Length: 218
Image (tube, rainbow, N blue to C red; front, top):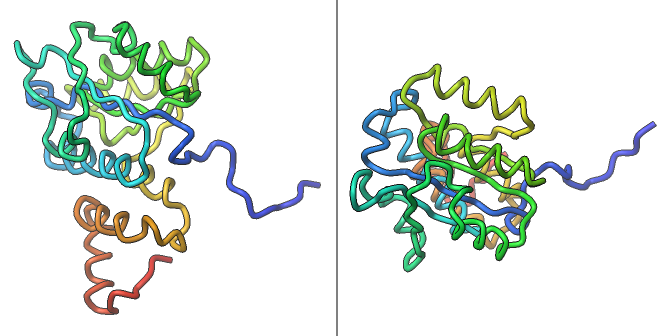
């Protein structure tokens, strides 16, 4: 008979146990992205980057052909990491760039969390490569997108079949917070959720307005 203890499950993410890699959130890549609305995609990417900044998550930002074709990374991401280098690649598979391998090894994390465009190319490549080298891999599915629903969904199916753990942007933020009694990050988390958390964010704004600043999430 198992015994319950008040400890989190081992598969839950914590701020210091993973490396976040945000890949190719660029204007040209987003033009052909049809599986998610562009505004929602930008909001979700902002929610992820806010979460990483709030909790001090080790993060790699990377683009492909930024100056010659694909354009800059979304401002919603870059402004959360002032002075942070954005590694610009020629490889479609981020994992095949030696500079990325160096950064991954420097971070020293066994868990990799991925988000980016397009799911079937920019995310499948590093996800399967990292799995093959023994890393645990999580993909923030709604901070990714592809040229069609089919392309995104089949890419997610392929990765999940190989062992990737899918999560969402709001789930990522709240999983890192996990306890509303953690007052050091409470305000920043609720502000990020209010700004970028869609209907959930509206609910927070309503609660704070109607119930006062001491309103808490349940």
